[in-house]
Image (cartoon, rainbow, N blue to C red; front, side, top):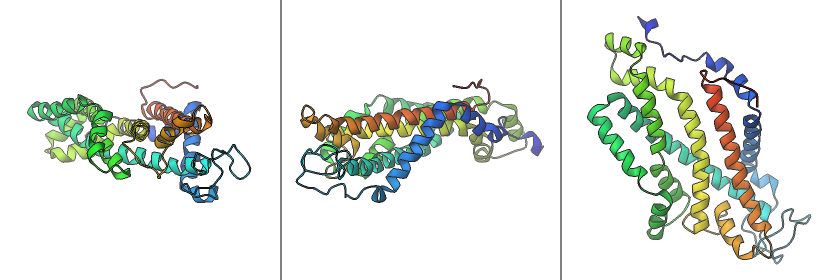
Length: 291
């Protein structure tokens, strides 16, 4: 009977998922770029001789040997600030994604598995949160609370899990009707064991893809909040508040705005490439072609 109660997508796909992922050239390029960016963020102190808040008298200096990307309006090294700011953006993205996955999987699995009144209440809560605009609410809260890294992570994490919950709910609604779940019920297996051991593993591809794309969404949201003055506050460097500071000098020195703007776009685009590659690699039902 034990052999009957096996997930339908049991992971032979794991043996060939990497091969399928490698066929997507954009996904591979995206992964390489993200690994390089993460390595630079971790090793920031080894890549630049300047602290991100170290000021000098070289105001708005053009690129030079001492300052490869020039300096900002108070003489801070632009390259150093960009590298250290990547720590903030990537930390926010990863932490927010983790929170959204934990809450989303918990709520979505309960709603999808139990259906009925439980599903109605939980889905109603999801719909209420979906009706609340994230950025305006964060701005209102930021006006009354101290805005720092922890604030940004918590506010984005606790307001962004609804998309993951809806995906997991849909997966559970489909999977719980399959034959291997029926067999598990017939042998008297406890609901929680069915959820954790037999249904949840089958949703891992969707969870991984959703978590990856959530990193990109969180980075964009943090950048928007910081740009508007309700996110990471100066002198801590983030790509968003660097954009805010640069807008005053756009006509004089547009590169101050272009540098963080390009990094935000590059990061989000490559995360999306990786997310698309993971979706194709982890779903054996899709037809895989080289790109």
